[in-house]
Length: 287
Image 1 (cartoon, rainbow, N blue to C red):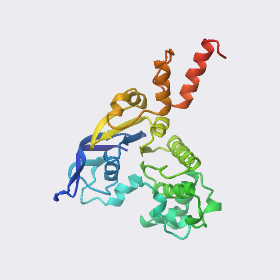
Image 2 (cartoon, rainbow, N blue to C red):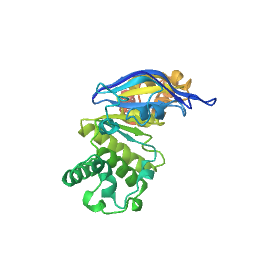
Image 3 (tube, helix red, strand yellow):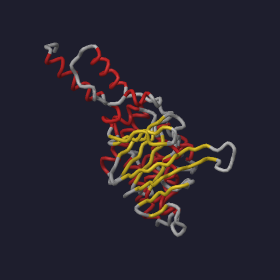
Image 4 (cartoon, rainbow, N blue to C red):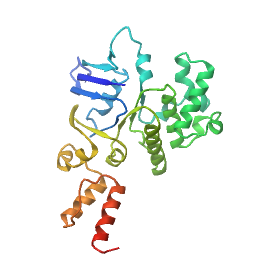
C-alpha cells in the first residue's frame, strides 16, 4: 500500500485569533512494508500528522492519497480508508467499552458487515497476533485485565479490521517496564509475520532504534530529518537542537570514543554495543 502526502498543512482554530499551525507544508511518501518511527518534541505535530492518515481529521490545505485515492474524495467512505489504515491512539484501553474482550475486538468487523463466522475468524486471528489466549480471554471483561493486556486487546481491535498500515501513537505510554517490553515485542512480531506497514509515534529513542527501519523527525510542524536510524542518530547535535537525544547506548559509546577508545560510534542498540565492546576487549587481551 502506498501513502502519498502532498503539501499538507493543518491549522487548529483556523478562523480564530488563537489559531495554531500544527502541520506546515509537509510532503512525504510511505511505501509497502515500511516500519517508520516518528519522533519529535511535544507539540511538534506528530499526532496531528498521523490522525490525517485514516481521515480522522482532514487537511486545511494539501492532499493525502491512500493507494491513489484522495482521503477527501466525497464518493469514498471513510470506512474504506480506515480498513486500510488502522490507528491506535495513546492509552487505547480507555476506549474499551464492551462487556467482553470478544465483543470489543469484534466491534470493528461487525460494523463493516462481516458475517458472524468471519468476525470470529478475525477475532481469533487478531488475538493470535498480539499473543492473547483466545479461549482463555474471550469471555472476560476487558476491565479485569492488566494494563498491558488491555493495551493488547485495544490493538487487536484495530488489527481485526485487517489494515494494510497500522499507526501506533505512543503505544507504550503509561505501562510498566514489563508491559512496555511485551507491547514492543508484539509490534515487532506483527511486522515480522504480516504483510503490513507500521508507523510508530514515540518519545523513546531506544524504542525506535530497536524497532524501525526509517525515522522521521518532526519540529514545529515540519519534517526536520528523514533517514535510517543510524543516519539520524549519527547527528546528535542536530537532534539536540530540537530538544531530542540519541539513545543512551549511543551516548555511552560517544563518551567512550572521547576517552580515547578506538570504537565505532554508530551504535544504536545494546546488542550492537555488546558485540563491539566484546571484540574490542578481546583485541586488547582483556578477556
